[in-house]
Image (cartoon, rainbow, N blue to C red):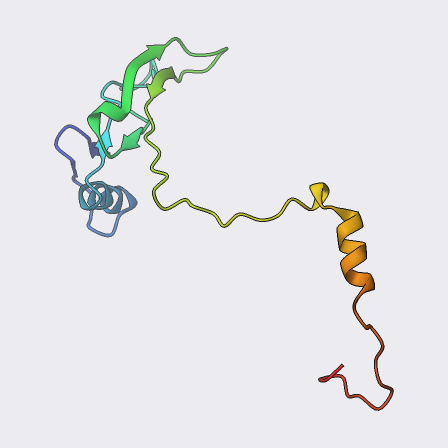
Length: 125
């Protein structure tokens, strides 16, 4: 089990839980779910949900909702704030083939000599 408040676990270093905690620390992530999300009357409630982001402000209005149907698992409702950086997202523009001027293309193609000499090789054709 992971102690998310203190970011540690009592399990061995090679356990999934310890590796997860190590990655959360390495990537400087914030775990937003602080309360139990699974309620079992026969055992201790447990925190099963993770909402991991880089900043505390990425998640707002986190609400723990009643379970859906016969589930013993809480539903979570929250606002996720996403910042998109378009600085490196410049895609090269491409012509729209559906708006091509077919008449001009046919006129240009008709002025080209398309004949191939029979003795030409594939490389020079």
